[in-house]
Length: 422
Ligand SMILES: Cc1ncc(COP(=O)(O)O)c(C=O)c1O
Image 1 (cartoon, rainbow, N blue to C red):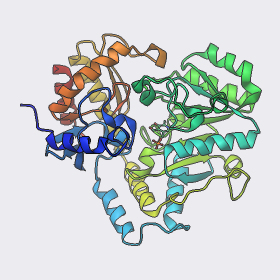
Image 2: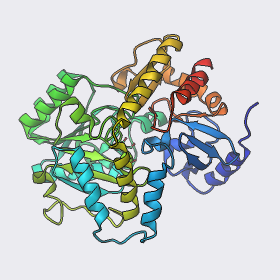
Image 3: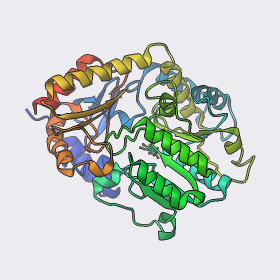
Image 4: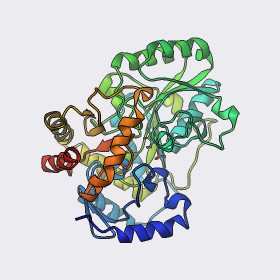
């Protein structure tokens, strides 16, 4: 029997009269998969419950922050304890020092970090820092990589925009968009040509070292090394946007896993353990150019909020415990091997606890250009059936799914029962 979702439908109807599209962020509107989104009232471990009382096994996990599952007891306890001492001070406090210690332990190539509130803000800060320190104006980015809604980054930016069928956003002055040079992923010749033409003008090259916003487009190590080499030769600041990747595969960044060092790293999502915390991490030389030490301005009323930072500290402390990442990798490997057995040849790309179903009998692509809209449409067509059977995946086939330490192999088997039987 189809579960009732009448309360969600009524709430969505009211929301649409009050908020653009009824949502606070576009993909939540279920535009591609159709129907009303579920209104969630509570979440714990791998589950969410909607306003109609339906239990949903969650593989979207707030789009990545909840690597420990929802409402992890240690994180909730840390937040509750911190809240009792006040919600915001707008001053320095000990949680900043504690989280900075953890972040710099995880990113040994860096000496300083600045805490901000969102991934978008971290990227805006990193780009300004790169422009300020080099005195150059241009940025190189890659098709399909998403770096938040920073004006100059809304050029070939990945899932949200692909999902909406927009190649660009209105409201970005031409002059700003023109400061962004875009090349495809996985293409050393295009990379070399871009540096040949623009190298001395490029302040920054920014990349998701494991692109995970427009499918899961795993790149070759040699390609990342080539990017590093071009940046070094041209005096271009290399920014690894690890808002999704950071702390996901080990206690550090994807860059260190690949043995490629960026000059700056942006973090978010897991860093706040479900509350809004993001950061720019980098060398003393670069970060010292931020105000109040240097002439590159950046500030924030809510930056370094004590309650949010306490959630981040508790999350990273839990992740550091021996065996955590091994367990996540084992769960991911289970998903991959069972999919291979049962998936009738359908594509699945998996790295650690991230997975991307590509519902065709081909090897999933490694560039945004190679993703076929008709294949992604199969995901959208099947989505409501999965939801009605109690499995919550990202409501867009361009987005990746997430596993957490709260999931078990039984939960993964349930996911495959629902996805592969339909
Ligand atoms: C790689 C990457 N960079 C930046 C952002 C923007 O972060 P936020 O949504 O916190 O502004 C995201 C968000 O999904 C992201 O995945």
